[in-house]
Length: 277
Image (cartoon, rainbow, N blue to C red; front, top):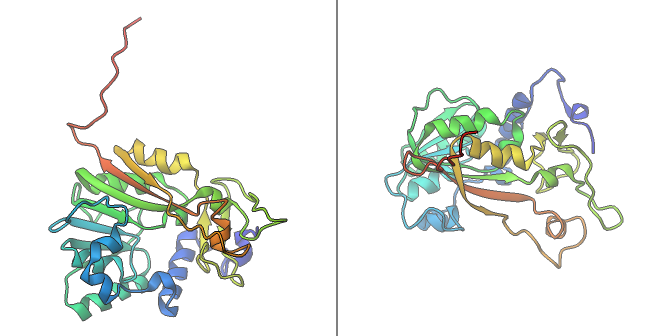
């Protein structure tokens, strides 16, 4: 593992600044994460958005926040599904792709450049759904992110998020004698993508943080949200050669997805009454 400082163009840059610049660059270069929704997906958007069936039959009329989800895909698909869409992203380059597709397809979308940990422009209890693709690995301090998500969700609102498995972030991209090994501790070490080794498991030029499962799942629960479902998307390909994502996924699931619901007065966990001593 290479220390992230070796790849900092400016060692005084914050992780936030570095990752904003990385996603601006990906937007300009046509990276796979900066690919807008296709016409075929737009005709039947819910399966493209919700392979697990967590959203039910319709989200028409919902207020949806696509959090750290610029790039012209999520905004268009949620609009096509009938939602009122807001996108918050740190990268203006990614938001520009949303601007272009909204103008091309003539739909309204609210676009906001901001960090996921501080969104004072959004009202309390404003959203029925907050959807967040992989992005918690780009911040060093998770509690403010989950606090903001909880604040802006309506009671009984859904938070659907995908995360990089911390073990995957801690582990080697290349096998050693047929095995992938853990190379870095949780929480303490930023992990830099090696610029000369493009891979689906690391975004180029970014710095990623391996937060623990307790920080992610526990953080969601500590902010008044109840986890209802958990899946690890299957990326295994048993015929893939060594050192590919299909082969590595046999040993280390790269991602997990969480469905959580904002607690309301009626679904708060009951307090256990203990006898006084």
